[in-house]
Image (cartoon, rainbow over all chains, first blue to last red; front, side, top):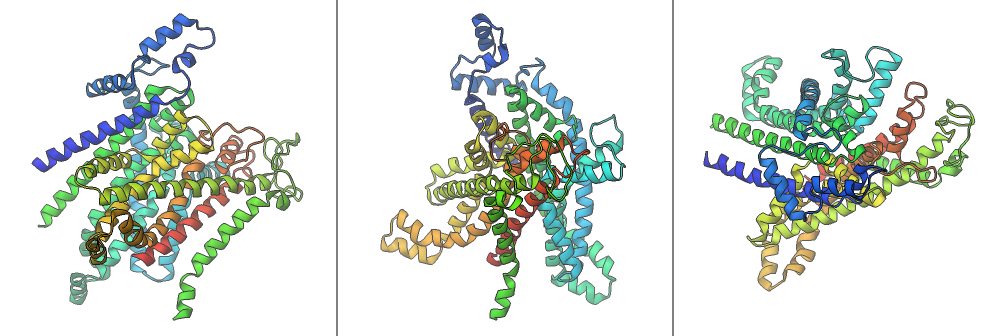
Length: 305
Length: 271
């Protein structure tokens, strides 16, 4: 318990550090945001008012501590353009991104584990090298290239799926984006499943079970898979954090109204509070996931003891 | 034995050869394609034919030439950014590995912080705040990728410094600088090589993603095209002119694949 509490305090400090760095980033943005915001026809008074509103006149440290203290009460400031609270905007978009990420996780997990098992069982044979080569290609393809290739094939040549947008819960719209998002992590899951399974299949107790005459599929699915759950689930969950980065690209290609699209639009408009908010939110999710993984690993290890 | 050794590295040599071909063709892009990559022709987009092997884009520019010349930016930025992040990560990692109990936790948590911020988001934020330009891209990629290197180096340094030969050097009276340069660095370098090649792949991917997202600077007519930016421009006409985005996409993927496969092969060998 104490260890968990200490970990949480440490992670809190890490988050504060991340806030510091992101704040530093924003601080060095060249040009006066107030002048940009006020537009062409503003006079000196307007600019001064905006500077006051954004507290641009204060020093770096005052602004940092003000931001942190507001952050603790879950206030990330307001969007410069729409005036809405940043956290509300993010939470409004979050379900869309989570939907995409969960779909991608399911697709990547399912295909990756199946292909990984297949490759491990055919270790060193043609099937193994085909699966490994395909996964290298997957890992090396930038996500926007995958997006466009999928769009070209499925919505242009075969005319099966809509190329972009989101309409309610129509599943046709999220097949392409979630496949694109899943593509890179499929490859990682294939590799980790394959390597771990090969390790387990060489262990003594699997040899014992083999000697006892169990059929191959039972050995794999009942005895061996149990032992690779931890590393495989770890990589799947870690990838879930990486989807947030991938979501930026995927959502901008498929005009999917999620957090990634929000960030792209905010970057285009130099909407600083939103940019800051999304980067921090992404960092927070990543840290929280890491913490969950640690807890989960701890639980599994305890159970096995 | 020697035969086996030769075959073992055949794939590495093939990958290096492909990378060299891509680099050379980016140097001689104009001669190969027969057109200036910047020459605008107001006939507009045309599909691949015998005069333009890969067709032309919306400004009538030759796509083959632009695709080939696009390799310059990707390779130069990819290699420079990775060198930078390796050097910076190496420096911080060595500091962590060798520093006393006072600075160590501090440096360690700095690394942890940078590990926690998703690299693409950090790079995007930096690209916004530093303004446009090649240097910005390099700095953003370094900022997004140095932390894993530092972590790796610090862990390895911790292991290496406990080896007997390092300890005995200490006993003879070798100072920090001597121990690092003569005993620790030589042990780390072979481990850094695969980190370098897979890292170049990551940097190239980040660079193309940033320029795809329009953060690498506005595309003026005279600047060197980059693949990400070409794909971005072509994506507006993806259904009318799919030939615009295909060549840069394919060559970009091949280049990343080559660096990744070399890295994979080297990792298999060092572990």
